[in-house]
Every structure is written in C-alpha cells, then in structure tokens.
Image (cartoon, rainbow, N blue to C red; front, side):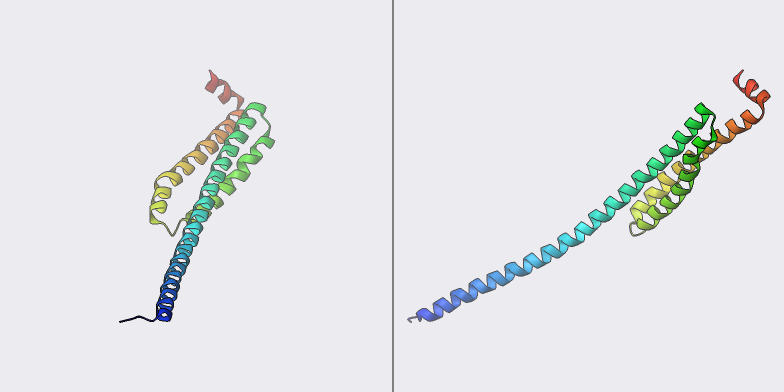
Length: 145
C-alpha cells in the first residue's frame, strides 16, 4: 500500500487551495457586512448632525428674540423669522430620513415634535407679547408695575 508521492503533493495542494478558497469567501462575506454596517453608521451620523443643526436653529431663534428684547431693534428678529422656517423644513427632513426605523419615529413623535412646537410657540408668544406691550405703553407700565 504504497502511496505515490506525487498524489500526496497534489492532495496537499488541493487542501491548501480549498482552505484558501474558503478564506477568500469568508473575507468577501465579512467585507459586504462591513460595508452595510458602515452605511448605517453614516446614515445615523447624518441624522445626528441634522438634529444638532435643528437645535442650533432653535438657539438662533431664542438669541434673536433676546437681542430684540434688549436692543429694541427689529433687525434682531431676522434670525427668529429665518430659523422658524428652517426648523420646520429640517424637522420634516429628519422625519423622512428616519422613516425606515420605527423606534426612531416613535421617539421623534414623543419627544421632538412636542418640544419643537412648545419651543417655537413660547418664543413666538414672547415676541408677540413684547410687541403688543410696546405698541401700548400704558399696558407696559401696568405689566411692569
């Protein structure tokens, strides 16, 4: 039962080739998974950046109102008026970008929408109250006293 040396060599090469082929297929599968996970990470990063921009617009709105209240110059209301439109459009964009994730949609509906509406309504109410008080000096004196 003597095995030919050339058959042993061929068998060794065949086994090495099969291991190499198996390793190659595992590399392809793991690379595809990595690319898929990387796209989700990029998507999440984009949503987070848009949410931070949304917060920045809300801050701009408040800063514009404060500037108006302190300086009594309506040019400071420009950030308020522009940010109001930007907040609406950016929230709609974030809402559409998270439409593929039901959990994020739920969080957005519970937390963000009521907070955005409240924040913008309070800022608008403060601006309108001040404008109505300044148009009627007697009301302003009564409100301060």
